[in-house]
Image (cartoon, rainbow over all chains, first blue to last red):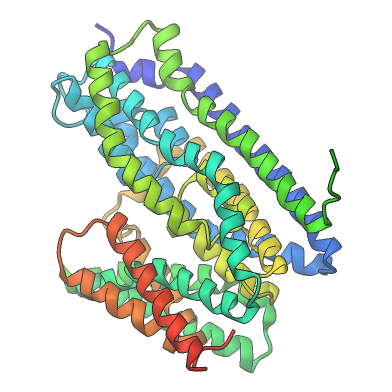
Length: 238
Length: 224
């Protein structure tokens, strides 16, 4: 019986991954073109539009490195192409590991990799990982238009409230992730503090030195600095 | 039948929905290529009973989570941003922070037409950058595996979420600490109650945030 990892790392799956990534980039390109034209129609400057795109790209660089770290932890049990595809499209590492675990369990295998984790169990894991993400994608594909109409209809009357509401909605999601390290204390709290401090310093530099260009780098700089601090401070907390 | 002329803004919205409604289902089908190839090319298919059990198991977790999540994110993200975010994932840890800070650096307000354009471009930028960086990671997977698991670097990557949200927290507290107070207090409360899944805590925190904001706005204490 051949090792399932030989199958999992077969070139055909790499080709598959390449096709999927190209499709994702194609979608992003279509939206970019449409949004760029709309921005120009609204009288926004080329420079502003390009800056938004660049800010999004720069801010995502460090989180993307974290995805690679998650990938590295999944590769020994699931091969390279499947985690690559799953983490590039829809999924996140905790979800994928949970789904892969559920798949293995239905075959009577507890845990991923190891003995008893045959090609068939691997296939069960992959089917479950893919199936779990059907729901959110279909919901977004078919309900967004209707939901949007309802939301915007009630908000267009009061633009100032709309703006406050947006910030409040962003804050609602972010607060959970801000509170978590505070509750856990120790190294997570120290990292949170370091990141907040660097962000504040960058903010000061932007306003005092009129260094507008720094703005797009604010998040990336704070993250790199705070992660460096986490590496340096780790021995104190272990 | 009378054909109603669409305003340019409506035409733009419709165009975004059209692109999204075609690309998202096609993308979903493409993600099933690996299990289909395992089956059709390698002849590996788990028994029907296990397959059914697995699909039912994961769906019973994901259906409620998906409904709540989509209802939470739809008002925050523009239509195009939704379609891109749900095809590529990593929403709360990558797409939302990118969109929030890009609107800041473009000097536009969230919830306006300009804000929608800026956040759409930011999320597109985020998709390009993250997908390409991950591809580089795949190409370099062998040397990276060894490097990234060194003891010195491990804590840095374990703390990636605090490193992200410290900066986000500082940004919002500086911008409007009054708006930040209520959701942070509720989030801390959830933090001390162990075992509440984020599928419940995030929408409740969002609700508290919006209600508090409504109160502050009515009192004239919150400005755009």
